[in-house]
Length: 145
Image 1 (cartoon, rainbow, N blue to C red):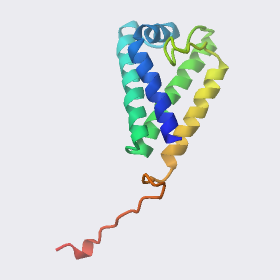
Image 2 (image 1 turned 180 degrees about the horizontal axis):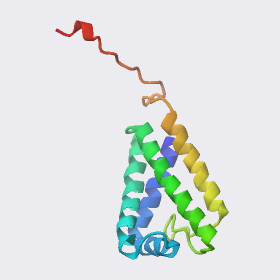
Image 3 (image 1 turned 120 degrees about the horizontal axis):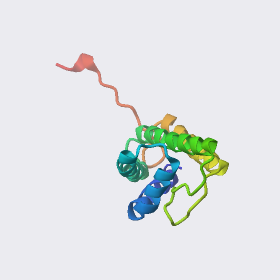
Image 4 (image 1 turned 90 degrees about the vertical axis):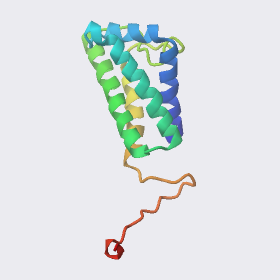
């Protein structure tokens, strides 16, 4: 699950990186961010998706990265829900123009499933590459000179 979630997030980020105009339009159409902040928000979202996705694939600080991705996905769910409540229609921009998808309740459900995966990963014990739980090393402070 860690690898699939990381791959999906980093892929979405890379698609947005190379097709920035369509994602920029998607952010503008949601009308949640003041015009001067649209580009910086786009850059931050794309960078977070790419780097957090790659970190998840690599297994780097899985619980922390998954929790950060849960926050990002929560923001996506909130933005989509606000847009739907306002009656805004259009492309979500999730995967750029490669797989355009219209704003709708299905996106909220899909992102909620992604959120559940992120939360599940964030509460799991850290595992080593063989799938076994990592041993926690304890320090015996009584033996330190």
